[in-house]
Length: 311
Image 1: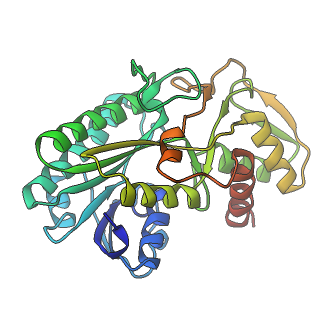
Image 2: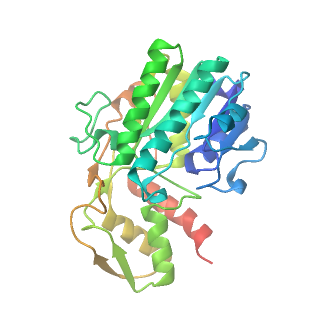
Image 3: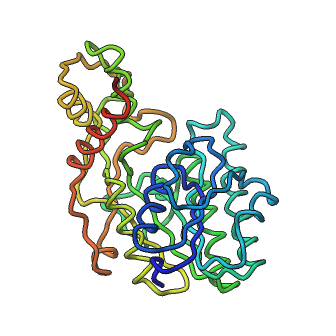
């Protein structure tokens, strides 16, 4: 389908990827609605021209207000992360509950297209680069487990209830307005104390970082081009960046030279996958290639976030 001339809903549209997708779709001529509970994003991130409804998608009543029968497609990007919860059970139940509520509602009102942001965390500690058909899927975090459960629900609705679906397994997406991630974390720490920087783990964790502008471009290309009942694609870059290299880039952009202080161990936190790079051969075969490598995505994001964070 072509989302640029569609009536679309973006859940989580005040967040990083959702707000950028909503803005891109508006620029291309779509009618855009945004639903968000503003627990992570802010109202000013919702682009001008989008109709906004404040909605808690764990509440079926709020979902009913947001998901209407005149929509052509729902982009379900709302999700909570580990940083939002101390309670693993609540994290799992709220994320999977939101997805089930939205799927149940679109089936009820007859919307038959659905796009979803999944995560590289569904693979667990898999060989790199990891293709979409890698098995067995063994996530090591509750967040990754919830995303995999979401994917199972989406598969059911795609194959049994006629809801054509696109599932995007993200690498680390970075860019303006982001918070609660390594880049803004380093900026905030160095703004407070430019002489020292605490780095979780040993700094050798190495992952693929994709700039949000490329992420939303790839999403739209896949939705326009892939036409199976269920379409699952990795989104990322062919290159990776280590945590220490991110610290170097952020320090360079801030013009500081801190002493690095590592907390130790090969993970930054419980459930952290130390090494991650997704195969994007399937995406490439569909005619889309990233133009910004991982290091450059980190640097570009650092510059954008420094402008937002540092006085």
